[in-house]
Image (cartoon, rainbow, N blue to C red; front, side, top):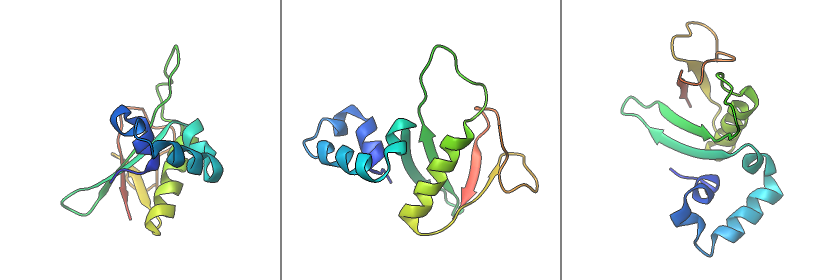
Length: 112
């Protein structure tokens, strides 16, 4: 499932006339989504888990760790859209609800 922020991310969709209205709506309701480069997409795995993502940060150097504020924004928007809270844990995290400052290459695992 692609959301409005995803639509604005991909040129083929972002060039559609309705993209202007989508951008204005997001800017009015949740400007942090655009500021943080959120590209909210959801894919359901066969076992019911959701793969959610993602954010885009650009710069001269990349922080080797995930940005916690961006992760929280993605989770909050997913919760708002689905109406269900998430239960997340980073790959390999045993008992914590979510690993903080996980390496960028370490995917998170979330369920709703």
